[in-house]
Structures are given as structure tokens and as C-alpha cells.
Image (cartoon, rainbow, N blue to C red):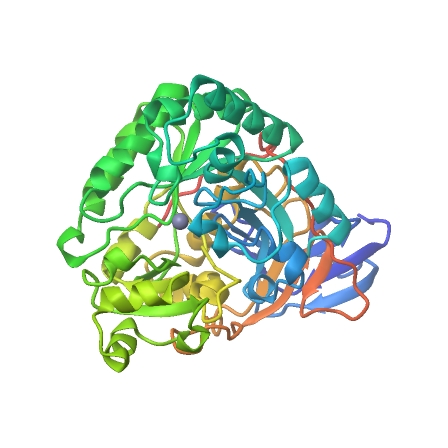
Length: 490
Ligand SMILES: [Zn+2]
């Protein structure tokens, strides 16, 4: 049948539609931001054709865990996303987001992860600015719990009074009405770490009433990881709020293997009917602000940025301490405010967590860092190259489902994460034989290889085309029209 002239036909490729089923030979036709036709489109007319012979054509990847909130303003090209096939990102994670702004005098170290731009008064103002700036890729935003505390409490290091709790809940309600998809907690940081069950439950009830979710950087990812997982699951159990455990991991060799227990706990919660998912980035090192108290318990720490000592970016803390003739903790104190990479995970455990049926991929990339963790530029292509092609942990189809239809379902991003007629035309074309990350610990900002074309809402964003307008949209949470039938790892 004839489809009134299409804007674009991607022809000759192997279609992996995101829903977990086997690849098939099919052309994909795009018109007016959407997928308009799938099949043999040889006889169809189109303004443009992309030859995808021998390549994979898949839904654009959804980064379930980003910190790009302010980058849509500061560095709107977002090449670290588009060059690895990411077409949508969930921002506002780990308790920190672009809005609401703190009360005067209130601050938190973790906010420095986001960038230089002043935070926005509320999510309405944040989204208005994003719309004006035109996002390169689609963005769904969470509200940071630290922001709520800093905006609603005179003393954010305290337990909220009843009226402060009420104020936080009203702010959250307002942010969700503005289009935020949920809220995030960073219980390992201050001031989020002050929060106890009652406070978290109160906020989660507000989110649940909106059908929104709670994502958490849990209180502890080391010696107390099992209790920390349990805490967040109990918020979901108490309130019915859907829950995502962010960048799930077990740090320090003595805790390696504990994910067997944490994943079993997640499975029990899911069996009870709690909507739980998780994400990982595919590396054995983590990255966040530099925490001096960790300096002596983790052997290998590398500095990613430092305000007083920018010349130390990329160096190991041990080398810096040796040069300065002091202990590592003292060196860390002198470097702060600063960021760091901590090598304290077991790669085999990362891979085991990744294979869990409700585990997504979240880059957790920190684009504001001077010497960032390579996950910023390489998480998704690293999964395709190393976990799928080299290690054969799961099929390409199953891995793509974890990066597309699964996060679309979890975050309620209707019409995203799959290639089907009527879906938004977020599409990546890549070479399954060569796709790979190139970003390394030493050279962390190299773009991936093997990604050939990336489309957001039908428009090519990678490689960038001259004179293009940025095509991303702000995504609100909706029940998926087309729920993935089955997403199971091989
Ligand atoms: Zn985090």
C-alpha cells in the first residue's frame, strides 16, 4: 500500500523493535515525527533514504539515570548522549534536580554535580526554559528530594516539622502537576540522608497519587546494602509507589556477592505486587563527589574535578597524597569540593545484576566533571560491545529491550522505546559487529564507534546536520499504550 510520501525511509536493515522478539528484515518509514510504516518499502517515495544494509535498526536508547538537568542549558548539543544512541534521558536523580532552588543560605555538596547554572524556582520554570532552549533529546525529569528539603526547610539537617513536611509534599505535588515523572532520593548524601521512613512515605504517597515513581540512591551500597535495599522497598510497600533502585551495586570486596540477597529481596517485593525496577552502568568503578571519609577504605580513588586543585583532575588520590607528603584523607580534604571515581566493585557482580529481568541501563554520567567517569560517553555502547557481543551475557534483542521498552514502561513514556507504527520515531542505526565504547578511565570523553545514525522524533541528531533545530520533547508520565508483551533475558 502507498503511504503518502514519507519523510524518511531507513532501508535494508535488521529491525529489532525493542519488545524482545527476534530481529527481522524490515524497512522503517518515518513521517511527521512518528514511525509511519514498517515492512518492504522499496516502492515507497520518501524525501530521504538511509541505507541500513547489514545494520541493526532499533529504538533509540532511554538513559534511565542521568544528571544532565542543567546541560540542556549549558551544553545543549549533548554529544555524550547522541553519540551512543541515547534519544531520551531521565534526569533529576540521586536526590538532586534542576528545581526547586534552595532557600537562600541552604546548599548541598551533591548539587555541585549538576553544573553552574542557577537552579530554577520550580519545575514549571525549569520546563519553560527547556522548551525555549529546545532539548536535543527527549527528557523526563524527577524532582530531587534534597531540593525539596533545601527549598522547604530552614534547617535542612533537621527532621522536618509537620508544616515543613506539608510544604515538601505540596512542592512535590506541584512539580508532578508540572510534568515531573516522579521524585528521587539520595539517601547516601546530606541532607537526604537525614530522612526517615515517615518523611519518605509521605512523599511517596503524593507520587503514588499521581501514578509517579520514586527512584533512590539508597542509603548504603557497602556494608549495609541489604538493609538499605529493604528500606527503599518498604517505602514502595507502605505507599504503593513504584520504585527504582538506582545504579545498584555492592561496594568493597567484603560485600561482593551480596547482590544475590538484594536481588532475591527485590524479587520477593515484585511477587508481592510492588512495582520495582533497578538500573546499572556497566563498569566496576563508581563516581560521585569526593568523600574524605572513604579515602582510606578504598585503595584506588581517582579525582574527577577539584575546585581548589583543578590541576589534579584525572590523578589518583594516592599519587596526590604522596606528592603532598600527607595521608589520603588529608589530601582528600584539601581537594574538596571535588569529585572522584572509586574502584570498589566486582565486574562479575555488575554483570549478574545487569542480567536481572527488571534491570535497565542508566549512564549516571556526570557531564560537568573535568575528567568524568567513562560511563558518561560509553555506557550503552559498552553493553552492546562487551556484554552482548564479547561476553554473550544475553542476546542483542534482550539487551536492547532493557535499554528501550523496559525503561519506557517503568517511567511511563508512552510511544517510546519501541519501533511500531504510530510510535515516536526515536531510532538508532548501528553496526552490531563493531559497536563499542571507546571512552576509558584515562581518556573518558571519546565518542563510541559503530553508531551510524540517531534520530529523535524523526529528526537526525547524530551525526549532527547543519542548520538543524533540536527536536527533543519533554516527556510526561503516561500509561504506555503498547505495553511490551514480554521482556525476558535469554
Ligand atoms: Zn546516585
